[in-house]
Amino acid sequence: MRVLITGGAGFVGSHLTDALLARGDQVVVLDDLSTGRHDNIRDHIGDHNFEFIMGSILNEALVDDAVRRVDVVLHLAAAVGVELIVGRPLESLATNIRGSEIVLEKCHKYGRKVLVTSTSEIYGKNDSDLLSEEDDRILGSPLKTRWSYSEAKAIEEVLAYSYWKEKGLPAVIVRLFNTVGPRQVGHYGMVIPRFVEQGLKGQPITVYGDGTQRRCFCHVADVVQALLGLMDSREAEGQVFNVGSQEEISIADLAVRVTERLGSGSPIVKVSYDDAYEEGFEDMPRRVPNTARVKDLIGWAPTRNLNQIIADVAADISTR
Image (tube, rainbow, N blue to C red):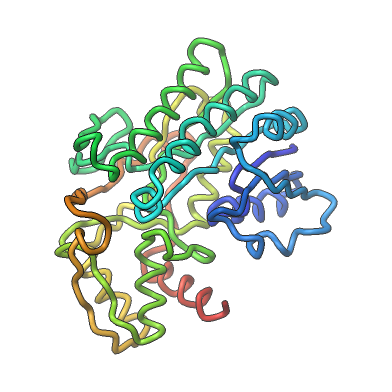
């Protein structure tokens, strides 16, 4: 197959690029390098099965030409990370809504299957045990930019689902829960690479809020296998899938775990949300996915635990 990956120079996208090329597919990467990095795909430059297009998903003509020349589209390009969303809300909304609209329009125009990567942010403040794909969304005020990412990705999901239901576009929606691993950076609020980098440098490890908020982290290598399996599955079309780990930990305990695994003497300090992000910032206390649907369809489950994630992130940061 010839596969287009929007955002293919980013964290998850570059790992998908590696996996697709390794199995013999051809890959076209479209990325404006706003959060992606050329270093992530440098090893593939010159490979006749690889093509890099420097550009934005907001460039309609560029997206049209790229989609026209491929068989399948993996749409990962998005403004991501809490710090980026809060700091540049208008730019983030344009990318996440209009950019996705353009990608889906072109996939419909040329009849290309598309896999859209959404997010656990969809669920907002819903902290129910084992969130299922049909569970309700519980969000704060639209005047709080914290929730703009969730709103934008929900619109993206509705667009993808409507194209499938009304126009027959083969579309798959995947909600990722805290994907982590090598190549991820902590600049935009990603907690594990930030903690690991602070620990390796002996700097204070900064826990935002009171640290009681609980999350699950999934290794990018496991996530890539889920995305490939769902991309290849005809039965996945028209459905939405949670993809993530169920190994739950509080952020305060995560900070302790990082110091222990690294043998770091870094102190752990707490920073208020108001100081870390903006006044009145809201977070959710817990987020754990129900992944029965993806397991039932393609037999997927994560194989790497949190200790392996921390080790791999530390090894990656140490070699930068």
